[in-house]
Length: 221
Length: 180
Image (cartoon, rainbow over all chains, first blue to last red; front, side):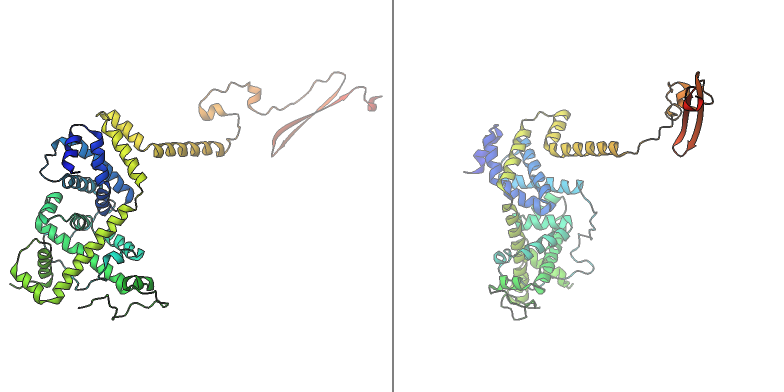
């Protein structure tokens, strides 16, 4: 069933219709919130508040975009507000209007293993993704999550974060490159289990790092 | 003006994201295998982030979201205003508040039980400001100087040691063996 009749029914006060919308999008909203706030309980709070807000302002939704597009903006706003309210450490932001900052590196011409679906089975890789996301600044992480999870355009992200497209591009570039660096570090010092996971072979007995001839490690640098 | 490698890569990323339609960049991608690998690497990182967050979302049990819906449902009907918000806050954090209250009560009770007993100086009125209503004789340890014992003799022994003051009264009747 299309969202529009559900939204129309929810706007007329049909609680079941709104519940259907909740059941349709709560996990997607949670993934988005988790990517930004990084704590499961906080992400749950964000999703809950976002749906309450969505219900409160449902009358203002005119249907110019999809319901989810409208909802994710609310989720992002609530998540960013949450970060501002609960900020424990003031992030150090570089001059984000410029791509090139001191110590910047270009993108790395290397892929990790070529099979993200298989890589995600490995707990080490997932733990490293978590760690790498934690290490990004809040703004870099928010942009990365919006882009990778929701495929937002630079313009949409600039509106959501109240900044320029150039700033969004800079944040996204740094976020992606930093994620890549941290994940490649894991690949360069892998456990035998990880090598086996990525290459689809049995785990080796020794704990030696994968050699340069590993078939899944494209290295063109 | 020549572009730095970082700027060139940023433009490459914009092109790969569909944000920059540039024939020169398309040409670079065609002829430069390293540029193609960089774009493949960006897509790979994107897939890893997306897949990881979606898996994390799938890991949350349905029951948690069902409980979330009950809380949302409960708040949708809530009247607006300060008091309902306080009640809603309490409802949401009820277990935290109860746990905190019980813990505070337990700590207070423990402190009450374990506090050191105050020495009984008999001078509570002075220390606490309250009036001591005990007879004057009881406000300090009594000391007996003499004892009238008709039909016998009495001896009073006053002892002062680390336990305080003790008065021993020794009475010998007149018809004891010694006097027979």
